[in-house]
Length: 430
Image: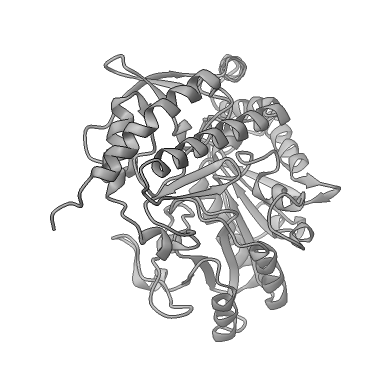
């Protein structure tokens, strides 16, 4: 396996090796087709192998695979990203840098924040994932503003200690961190809406309050929209708050300093981006002293896929994805309600996740406080019935515009049996 979650470690069984995909379905090497609720972990917003996206990539490939030089397509994509993050005449971005992965985007954002502020520390939230760069794999410690411990072998404790890991949705912890480390925090990085410990929805006003706190203390706010960007709406989660669809009263008035993108922005190809304020972004080389470079940054094939995807992702696409997601969420709730078994479905736009517990999931501790072992039986039953789910209870479910009514009916028909398998499951022997 070239990425750990694919190994089925938490759900058991043999991973399905995929040979091809089209629309809402993937087909494994044995020739069996599955309704796909992974969608390549988000990029397949339009469905797999959309003909116009494939044609755009093929046309780009006919002109060369990589040049190591600027192309017009890079500028077009940057302009499209900036234009999308404009709600009511208020822009979240002024400059964009294209990179190859979400990890590279968040790593660059952290370096840029430190270069802009000349400060060493970064605040992140427990249960939020920002890629696998050393400083962002720190785990949560005990107490408020505890400096991070390495979350992986190979990370020096001294590096992890530059990250302060706080409980999510807790402004008191944020205030305490700034009070405990005056003039030393370069940035707060947060997923716009958490989607890596299951879905962790921000409390109303939380993101707006983070923007206010960082401005007050001279730090930057980095909004990680690698998963939510262009997936939960045409302007991502920030766009939903800016338009007054989420976030509560006052959510429409804030903007982040930096935003990171991945997944949908590349249309399924390896591409990501970082954008933000002009004065901060222009600190990047070659204009400024903060170095970042990449041979494949702005790769023409990836740019072509991203441009085609963003051009096709219109209001009708988002309406279809929202409707399909809502139908599956309702069916999921009904299947467990019929058995009298409590579950919680956490939602952020079209993203959602299932937790085997009663009560709202607000933070990482809540997410872990569940009978997560039940998901193994649930997953296995759905897979047996031809539905491919994310192979971890701590992942969000993804749908696409290709999930039509007939496909949704197939999913709904499988849920009651899978729910019963989960309810009847027994915890693993210790």
